Length: 441
Image (spheres, rainbow, N blue to C red):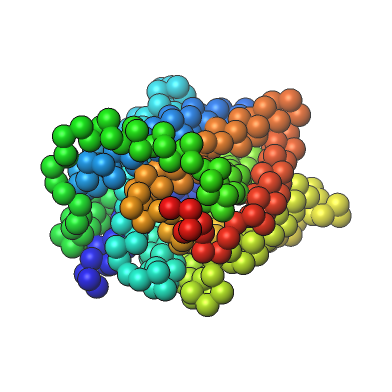
């Protein structure tokens, strides 16, 4: 069992760089550099992420139901892993002299969809790894291990590959490794192949140590049974008020958190004029905080339960989302600063640490809360609905940010919808029972 748990941990380690390197800290700021205008880049990034979110929202619960009925979750993981690798590799062709925004966003979305769908099936394995009392700690350690993987990958990119647009050197003053051409931004573009190679290598322990107890062959009529079960589950949600409220709550607060992750790097690049390496340092701080607090949060989850842990994290993230509006190159919380002042950078680094800390804890606690809310006989289907809850409005936050950015012409005003989404999540959390609606099944 211990090897199986470690194998499960390695999925988080292998997949985290897609979030860390591509969605937030390396590739997103690079897109801003290619487009030039920060508001225009933020809007384009928003609408591209929103399109991928719609696909995920539509298909996630169906895939979860199929996995419950047909079994063999590993087969689905391999399929979506292939999408992850193809999408990540495609980033290499985002050349500065031949940049096609639409093609780039399509390839990026393929990898993102693959990552999200593979996560549905690995998350659904969590209840098999320990008792209800143990899974909070297991989930927290898994998130911490994943954050560590993202940190190592990010450090490698900053030290040896991601070059500055002005100097052509990496963070420590080296030419990009492997003979990559800095003038063609090959060092930064290598973030795609590195993410893909990283995933392939570190999924090996998962392949060797994780076995799915569900049957390898689908029973006759599995697809029909899956769709019928899914319709029944959705229709019965009002009879499970705690699960219903939790899916609604997590739908909003996770969407807002993903909005922070998705736009943190491109926001810093546009508002604070940070380079790719500077944004990478911001990422390192956030990841270290996330890894440390994911472990602490896992233990708090075991002691107090996931509900109060989630509530505290939402309050922290509301504070951060509000603070972001008051930090710019020329002022901090309404106090004017010189153009060359380091104060805005320092404050934003602190906010990044808070995002990492609260984000790591809330994602881990959310996973264990879903186990408490879910019907044990329909766990993958429930995680499919959980993915739907996480993605049903995943197009909403990017779309609202994109529209707000276009209407105001301001990256700062563009992120204001995040505050409202966090508040909605906090309000709905009040109707969630700590141990779910087990009497309703």
